[in-house]
Image 1 (cartoon, rainbow, N blue to C red):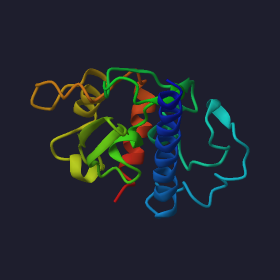
Image 2: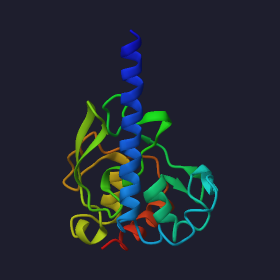
Image 3: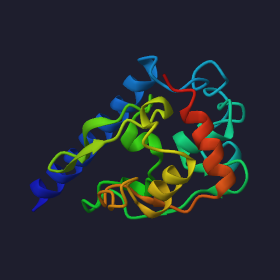
Image 4: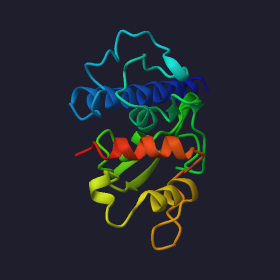
Length: 181
C-alpha cells in the first residue's frame, strides 16, 4: 500500500513538472502573443488585476488578456460550461482559456490535453482572424464561442467550451485575434 501511495505521488509530481516545463518552453519559444514578453509580465508580482498571475501591464489589450487568462479588465473571470471532459485533467482548480487549446499563436492543431494516462487528444481550430474569414463574421464567431454553433448551423464538438462572454469582451477578443499572424 505504501509503495502505491509513493508511486501515485511521484506520478503526480512528474505530471506537474511536465506541464510546467511545457509552459516554460512556450514562453521561451517566442510564440507567446504580442505583448506577452517584455511588457513587465515577470517581476510584477504574482497576482495582478482580475486575480490572475499576470501583472498589470502584461497585456497590450483586454482581448489579449481574455485570450491568455479568460479574465476581463471589465469584470474578472469569464466563465464557461463544457470543454474538455476527461475527468481530472484540470488540476488544482485550473481553468481553461483560449490559449489552452488554440495555443499561444492561435494556430490550434492536434495536441494532448491532460497528464499521462488521463489525456485527451484535441484538434483545435486555427482561430487567427485571417484564417477564420470568410467563413466567420463577428456574429458567427459569437455563436461559435457562446453557443458552440458552427457557421453551417451544426454543433461544434463538445470539447469547445461555451463561454459566458459579453459582446464588448468578445469584440476585444476578435480585435486581438486580428493581430495574430
